[in-house]
Length: 273
Image 1 (cartoon, rainbow, N blue to C red):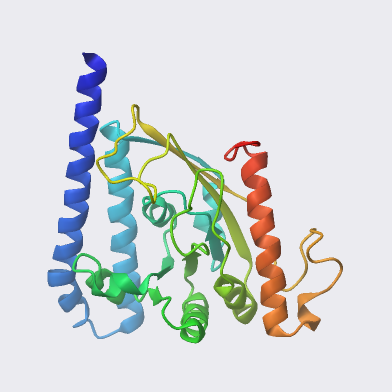
Image 2 (cartoon, one colour):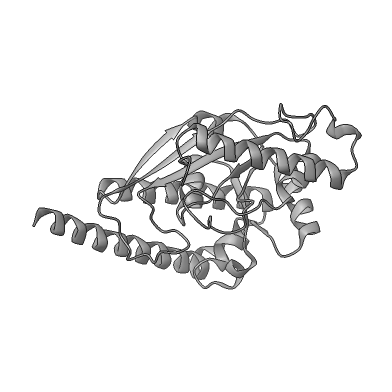
């Protein structure tokens, strides 16, 4: 009986969280977004909006933990707070990944799907925060480089969507590598895991697991985009002497292999599954 009551409570709390998230997003789009655009200084307006988003997601994550829906385990959080403008590259097992990363990163900008620009709950947020759409690869790189120059950390999920399976990633797109190379900024790999799986590509919000899910975040050492990683895919070639397309392809392959290997090393992926 206690197990059923616990499950029912977490189902209700999860539903309430999604409703609150949607309502707050809608209110932001309808009320805050128009007021924000009346602010005369673009830079301070964006800073204000991204700060509001950061604290809202911090509150949402704290609420989910308080009601017993989720647990959060973070290793290396200081790197997200203090690293300065970097390109955060993370795998994407669950819908809440962006919520968690924005809650952990005070000055962040995201690359988001173009569909969110027409979503009634998100359109005002992505515009006011000046997030970057993935619809145009060239503009994605240019806009992201501008955000980094303005002092923002770029958060990118190079799979483009949530991972296809608990032990498998989609192939990485090269956008993050082009951004890092153009901006001359390090890449900060982040490992993410959700156990038991929740809010995956195959699950609906009401598919609540039998116990509170634990999201684990592990921030790795930064990778310099202008010199090779210690990985066979790069051999001894320097990015500085490679054409940009080849350098981006090589860097993407190396970072993808690096993240895949660390997912196994850290126990987020299990060998043989």
